[in-house]
Length: 269
Image (cartoon, rainbow, N blue to C red; front, side, top):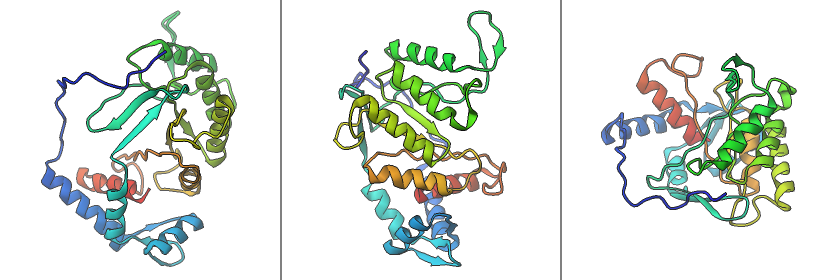
């Protein structure tokens, strides 16, 4: 099954901009100020030492303040385009400019059974059937697990989801891991399928990864370990910030405050 790499030249889309460039600039400046003046508490010693070596200020053992020039330099050196490939090393996704790609989500807690139209808890078979469907649909560019299977051990459900995706699609996979060990297991599973190191070459076969910390909205040892571990093997990581205004102690209630929080957290990652 081939996936789309080149989209039509005609772009009929209209970008949705909630903030003007001036307001975006203010949010960016406020995020830099938060990281520099307030800082963030990190709970992973290796990450603290890496930031300290780069020029960040560390006080009270783990309170890290990051100067704005370090953040700006990181943003400036981040690739503006990322090419992703399918399992057969064919171009599949070109992340850059205003290219748009489509795929399902990951962990719905319930499903409506298409056979009887009844709502129920999902099973691992639902993951497999959904992946088979996504693999056959031309306009689906990447695959996720769609539902959280209730008939497997919940502490290792991410491995079962990854197994189903590897079994039934060759498209780029987005997987969700609950902890560092789960992330490593999923990478090893993908390497076993392709018969070699996953990120050793330039053409990443199973190449799009999302790491979600479900227990809190602050970077913890697991998410930090996942980021550092994948960086060591040259994996390209997409950091997705999840914010619920006022939903936790870490995120402000008002729009601009939560936007600054999310932007600053993404810069930190």
